[in-house]
Image (cartoon, rainbow, N blue to C red; front, side):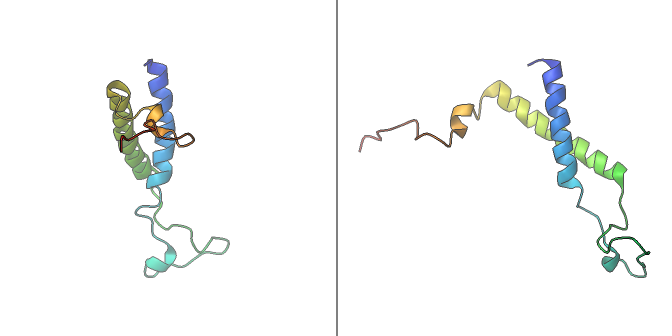
Length: 96
C-alpha cells in the first residue's frame, strides 16, 4: 500500500472519528448550574466546547482504526467477498 493511500485513509478516518467523539463530554446550559443563555444563542449549544480535546481524541481513535485497517489489509481477515450482501452464500450445498 502506498503512503499516499495510507494518508488519505487516515484523513477520512480522522474526520469520521472527530464526528464520533464530538458529543462526549459536552454539557448544555441545563446541565450547568448558574449558566444563563445569552440572547441569540441556541438552548442546546454546548457550554464547554473544547476543540483541542476533540482533535486529540479523534487523532488517537483514527490511529487505532488505521492500525486495524492496515492489519486487516496485510492479513486478509475480512475480504470483499465476505461483505457481499447481494448474491447468495459462497457455499450452495451444505451436504445434508
